[in-house]
Image (cartoon, one colour):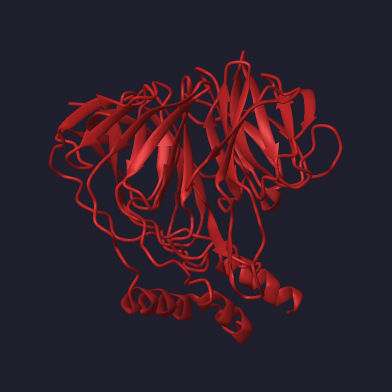
Length: 399
């Protein structure tokens, strides 16, 4: 395959669109019991909440680089008055700090390169306390710590956990939680790549103190460079003040883990949703309509080969707030080519409190990708119909 074909294939593999959102209306009663291992199990009558919270705009920034087309990898609230924006390789591999009040640029740092304080392909930012920021660079697989003014503090090489791709990182007292499935490799050419049970590790920076394999929490992908197929991402994680929330989108449940192990399971009723030929036709039609003129046939064939899952997910995305609550997108996410530059759907979320009881339903706007939540503030990336990205802050209005 030519370099251009590989580039197109990788672009076509990025997922930015989603299936239509479920209504999310209604209410859910919770029944709590404790098993013999001391794990609390919360049984919900439905993934739904009676209350509904609104989101009102605070500010939006689309021209802080003089160019509204970015490669925004992450947006994270890192202090009481600062937001960190991670720009990937297309955006110059930089880190910028924005003022929380109006989105103005406070400082910037980084740059493309492999030297101290430089980045190859930065993807994730985490708040480390005292204004410090940690940045995961997936190209050299290292973790860079920056000070409150983005000055270099230290660079740490990632531990060798067999973690493929970009892990999820969650800040914790004394270290970081790292979550990802381990890559096993394809069984044969053109067959689906299945990764082993997910690895949840606690990394203190000097050594890995805790490693837990999460049975069944897997990541399923295609063995080619195409990456994730539609509905292919399963194992997802989100922060909790004393650990992490973990979920497998094939199951109607999420689980809360801490340093001492599994602490809480939240479940709701659901029925299997087999993938049908109609789902495949819908996906392939959208790909054909969106593919740029002259897309090589082998690229389209690889796109078609991504349809490997048998069941549609039970839910879509997982996010968390600093108070331990977890936001669950109620509709399954379907990966679509990046050339479909439409703004994406409105998403419906059910918010569960730190103990797993439903609080409210929230709807995020069309084209908005939620990245971080602290208190009533929600920040993320807004994408318009032309594919232009901006940073947007919203505030939760609770009845």
